[in-house]
Each structure stands twice: as structure tokens, then as C-alpha cells.
Image (cartoon, rainbow, N blue to C red; front, side, top):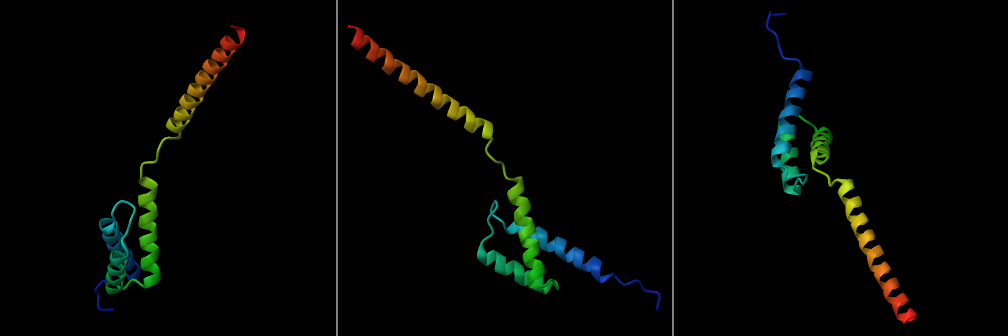
Length: 106
């Protein structure tokens, strides 16, 4: 050997994958990646030596991470709304039954 240290191919691949992942995250609009942006990212990956399959895996991983970090509606709020509607229905039903009883008794 001539004493020079050469970067390992695996380290270069990890660096290229990180660069592509950063580019994917920057190209996304929320959780959406436009098809034209995907094609451009695949070309960018190919230029960095990342195969199409691996580039698609990186894109999918970034999309999955973006979807997982999106704020989801709280189920408790939905249950609270359902409870309010059920109680309103019960009150209306009681009022109708009371009115019917008053009509029958008079």
C-alpha cells in the first residue's frame, strides 16, 4: 500500500444516502412528494451512485417518517363530540316524551 487512506465504499454509500434523504425531506410538501420531484430525486441518487431500488427505499423511509410525525387528531375529542350529540339526543327525546305525556293526560 502507498500509505494513503481511502474512504470505504460503505461510508461513501451512507453519506450519499444521507444526502439523498435530506434532499427528499426538502422536496416534500408535508407528507406529499410530487412525481416530478421523485423522478428528479431518482436521477440525483443515480448521479451519487445510488441504484433506483435503494433510492426508492430511501424515499419511502423519509415519507414514512414524515407521516409518523404528522399531528393526528385526538380520539378523545371525537368521543367527547359523540357524547355531546348523544346527550343532546337524549334531552330531545325526553322533551318529546314529556310533551306526548302532557297531551295524553290533558
